[in-house]
Every structure is written in C-alpha cells, then in structure tokens.
Image (cartoon, rainbow, N blue to C red; front, side, top):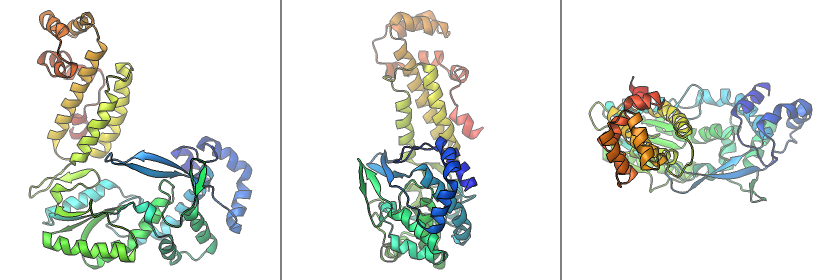
Length: 405
C-alpha cells in the first residue's frame, strides 16, 4: 500500500466523484489506514462510482469513454495490480507488448518489422469493437479464478468490475465491460486476451498484440483470409467479444498502420509514419499555431516544444527522414504565418523584417503586399528572414535533428 500510495501521488490525475485530489490522499490515508485495510480484509470495502469523461478518439471519429475512479479506489487498485502482475505476467505471451513491465510499443514495432523482412508481408489486422465496454465479466472472472483462490480478492476485483458509472449525477450500473482509465484495467484486458494469444501461438502464427490492437503476419493473402476467419471465431465465440469488420482487414503490411506506424514496401522494410499519424500531427500543430490564439510567440513556441518533445520521443522510431523534413518545413511555414499575423501593420512588418536582416527593398514589398499571410509565409524573402538560424535562436525544436542526429 505504501508503494501504491507513491505511485498514485506521482501519477496525479483528476479527482473522482468525491472530489478528493491526489495531493490529499496521503493525509487521508494516514488517518484512515487501519479502517481501510480492515474493510479490505473483511471483504466489506465498496468502491465508489467512477466519473465518466469523454475524450476525442485519435482518429477524430467519435468520443472515447473513460472512467475516473476516486483516488482511494486508485490506491487500492494500484496495490492489487502490484500483487497480481507478478502472478499473471510471466505466463503471458512473448508476442503481447501492451501494459506490461519492461515492454513497450517500440518492441512490438521492431518485431513486426522483423516478420515483414522474413517475407511475411501480408497482415491480418484485427480491430476489436468497443473492447473495454464489451468484456464479458463472468468470462474474465473465471480466468482470474484459475490463478487466484482468495475469495476476498476475487470479490474485490468483481466489485471494481460492477462499480457504477456516474453520468450527469445519475449512477448507471452494467454487467459487462471493464472501466477504461483505472489502474487495474490494462492487466484485466491482457488476462482476457491471453487465450487468443495462446491459440495463435499453438498454431505457429507470427503476431504482435498491444492491448486490443492485434496484427498477425502471413505470407499470402489467401493464408491471411483463413487466419482472419479462424481468429474471428475465437474472439466472437470463445471470448464473446466483437470484431470491427469495417476496421479489420487482410492487406499488405505497407498499407496498414500499427501503433501509429507503418512500413515501407521494400524488401528490407523500414518503419515509417502512418498517414493518420501525419494527419494528427498537423492537426495538433495547427491548434498550437492558430492565428486566433492570442498569446505571445514565446508562449506559443513553449507550448509547441512540449508537444514536439513528446511526439519525437515516440515517433522518432520512424526511419524515413523525408517526412520529418516535410513536416518541419510545413511547421516553420505555420510559425512564419504567426509572426506575420502578430506584425499587424505594414510599418511593423517592415521594421521587424529589416531588423532580421532583410534588405529594405524586399522588406517594403512584403510589408505592402496584400497577399494572405499563408501565401506570404512561403515567399523566399520571408524564408530568408526567418531562416534555420532564427528558429534555432528561438529554441524551436528541430524534429529532424532530434530524431536523426
């Protein structure tokens, strides 16, 4: 519990339905520790409802539902997670990479690239429809009970599965699904899908699974169709889950995305950014460089850099430099547009351009131009004034250098 307390404090996060913040948890726990532990031992502990929030899906289509437990429930779940993980994780498949100790998405990408280079250039891309909301709770509990005999622990896990969801002040209960957003949910999802992993292993398939995102690599389209049909039967008949037929497919690996990446079609496949990733990057940068956001350029660049550092840390796995150069060029054009917008009057534009070293003739032409800021941001003159040295002095993250240096 002491270790769980530190973890919940470091993760911070929003308050649940009781309004208690993570910073208040230690004080509460110090006062109520024995009472809480006694309730857990006696099996009388009852979690509070989770607070439902909705966030946009990564593809921009629809909203994803998250459940925010109270910090007290996060504490108990985190403690459970720390005890259950060493019992279940060693038995999980080597091809499962999501939400596991010492495993991460980049390892799944490396393994997928390895399969493709070995000649398995077709992929059976399986997408589970609304996975967390469709988990069959009795099926899940039966899998957990095979390893856990303590009825108090089983009852506690069941209570978290059955906990209500607070929506507009009304508590709604359901008998299926796993609340997405709680510390215990990732482990429970891996327990649920381990049967699928074991079946794929028994059949000798080469696959990578990250949470509910599963790619199986085969050599031909015909083999892919057979594997797809068999995998759907396992998922829908044995696990009682639902495959999203619209998003699932049998296709060449170079045409599909996996964890935000794709692969080139050459014999020695290389990791590249998926088209959807490029689209999301541009969408985010557009917001951070919006001309209607009335902040200083220093504040704008600071916010942009925070995003770029995190983005590069993950997507720097890609091996194709050309797209990073294109994105950087496009991002600089967005920033040049922002500067032009902030230099509202012709006089201000002229003064700043001259100060940046542009000749008075070209500065006067740009300042007097009636062309739109986006078009002007592409002109050689403005490109010369706001060049690579300027962006370096302004401390704008150089994504090409950061990834490929």
